[in-house]
Length: 102
Image 1 (cartoon, rainbow, N blue to C red):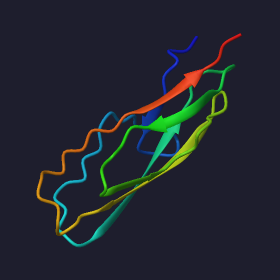
Image 2 (image 1 turned 120 degrees about the vertical axis):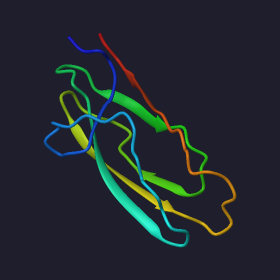
Image 3 (image 1 turned 120 degrees about the horizontal axis):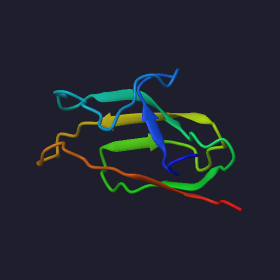
Image 4 (image 1 turned 30 degrees about the vertical axis):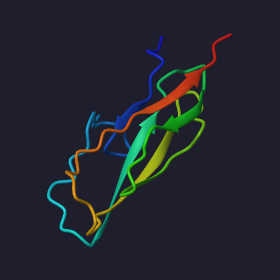
């Protein structure tokens, strides 16, 4: 049985789950990259139409739109810290997807 949710990990072996990503202190004017992993723990059903609700111009994310049953995928994150940025870097993002059962 599955919870129907995407799970996220900091390692490709899916041993270290994460709920948040701490980029630490980022000096302005540089690009930072990080790789995390997304998993679908369901053994039967894929998760499709995966989307990310983001409108932050500093954050770019590469991710799959479909995750097969019991599958995993790499997510590439990159953050460009801009000189023109005049607000904090606390950015909340959320992935969503649909699981079709039946």
